[in-house]
Image (cartoon, rainbow, N blue to C red; front, side):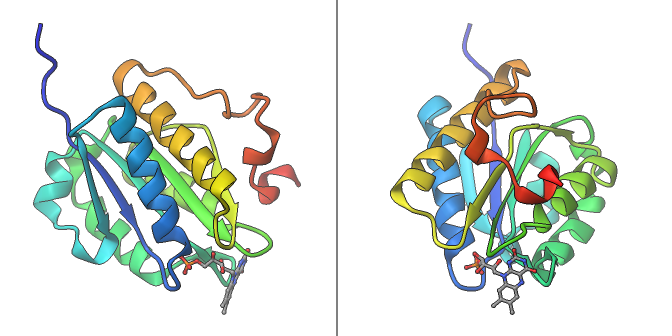
Length: 172
Ligand SMILES: Cc1cc2nc3c(=O)[nH]c(=O)nc-3n(C[C@H](O)[C@H](O)[C@H](O)COP(=O)(O)O)c2cc1C
């Protein structure tokens, strides 16, 4: 049987490029597993029709002032109008300096307001991603693609053993 065509949106807010680099690696990881499915865009360029039509949504924002970035908030207000997102797979990631509070903010808003079925694995990278971090991000993307296809959680989910994947704010 031919697989139905999927559209996975990977969107990001970024001021100095750290989160954009991470988003590129996440998108590459999804492409590893599901070639030809990914659309990678800054949040400012995403339209409502695109959101309505996507089968899964991954969102990245840096943490500024213990929050997500303003363009990411505007994006979530737009996405709120896309009721079609309800029940579809979602993933969130952040870059941060010391606390990554943006990640729980993003995860909970995507779950409670957009109604997405959130991938529980965490991707939080401190400042500019190292090659090792980019490899983790790529793995996260591939695991999210697995979640999109089968609902399987990645090994970095709560209870997993990928200790460095955890955002410090979840540890408190
Ligand atoms: C003014 C300012 C405020 C920041 N606030 C936070 C913060 O509250 N918590 C945190 O962990 N990092 C904070 N950071 C660090 C950024 O999250 C980090 O540099 C991030 O990787 C930037 O991502 P970007 O390059 O995609 O814009 C802040 C940085 C600046 C310049």
